[in-house]
Image (cartoon, rainbow, N blue to C red; front, side):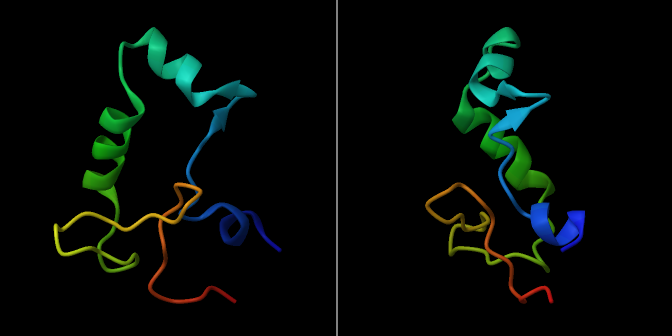
Length: 70
């Protein structure tokens, strides 16, 4: 499986082996604020969107694609 298929739409819980909470704390940002910024840049033609206009996430925080990538 290639890198794009493995990571596309996945929430970045770590970056350079550091938890996202640790990184966001350094810039005084909450997870909710970070998700809001990420959601603004999500391609709404590729991911499921709720009635509120925001991308829908699964229980892991990942975006749900409209189409299955093969």
